[in-house]
Image 1: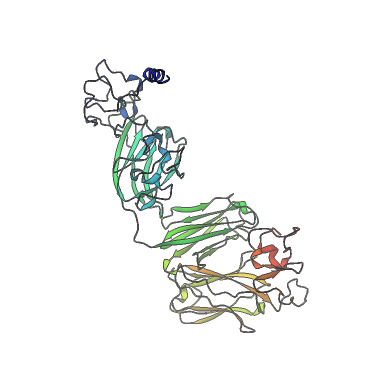
Image 2: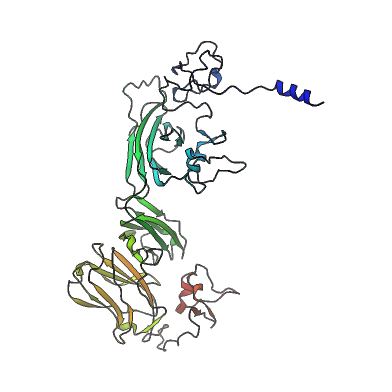
Length: 535
């Protein structure tokens, strides 16, 4: 009984238009179709295209789906509005869904881009359609009239990979970066200017995100036939090829930045050889007695670590450690007394798995006033240097810059330690090729006990930490002998109440001082819980 009413209801509903087919006689400048044109209400004028939806009443509507006289940079799809892309189910979604960092594939209420032409949502779902991709940056250096600029990036098969329409950029004289993952292939970069009067020197470039190398660049020059009385959108295309991958090895580097007092003033940049900033931490990204650790994949080569301070007194004990995941240090720096500074370091992936410089497993009892560093310089003696830091404040105690040691000579430098505690020895090479035949020994001259026997196989520098228990200096300067060794087992430390706790409690980022159910490390001898709690 209900079938007939339902059929009548369906018959009364408006039917969808037939599939869109472009007119082969469409000149697009302006719409010159016969008076039977019924699509005037959908003409957008974008890219001079005034016929995005086919004239269903035109006699040529059976023509092939190709706009042969279309001079604009886009191919008329008729399926989605500008700024949208069709997923594999045919639904239209914003173009920025592709490669936005969110997996839109295969979910019930989100778009499904799970098809090779969309590179599996640009890798947002952990796959790239079997294609190897590399990291790039599309950089727009905007000048005046930012609202006029726009651009589109297309793959060789016509798929729109990125779409930035005019009106997106709001600030003049600003650089906008768009990170992208792209495979090897042929691409087209299309620049748009809404008024058609050119970009006034603004540029659009494609950069290698690993080193900042500019692979493609260009601007939109003012057309010689521009008529200010009749402005209009213009576009121009630039084709280029990308070869993904590098024959230069790459490996991971840990960047560990520590702050102490006034941590909000600490700023830093990791720069490629050409000055391109690969990673950065602006002032304000750290708090007091804070640290940030991140991993960055770097190609083999020499880099620069730039340190800045929002004040004028330096990092006041803050420092940075650069190392491979295995622990082999490749760079160390601390900023003292200046508002800026920096150092170079070298990445050699052959040493990514090298062990850290040898260090004692626990505090070594030595006569701190008689500690020396003896350097037996090889042929590269003038390249060798070092700095000894007090880890509590990261102030430099003893420094010898490259040029101090002569080739083929053995030199002993007095490096007395002021108190029991932890220290860092940073070793350097002026040319960045490591120590060739040079050896060093940090030891207690009174007892002959070794603290470190450092060497530098490659690079500008490395570092190692060590800990001492002074037998000739009382921790509190009262003249009393130092306390006996800790009664705690290996891997544990003694708190101020005499209780043994795991050694990992110190310097773990948590303040264990003065709480009811946690150890109490609030004493100078134990370094205020390794710096986790402000003194």
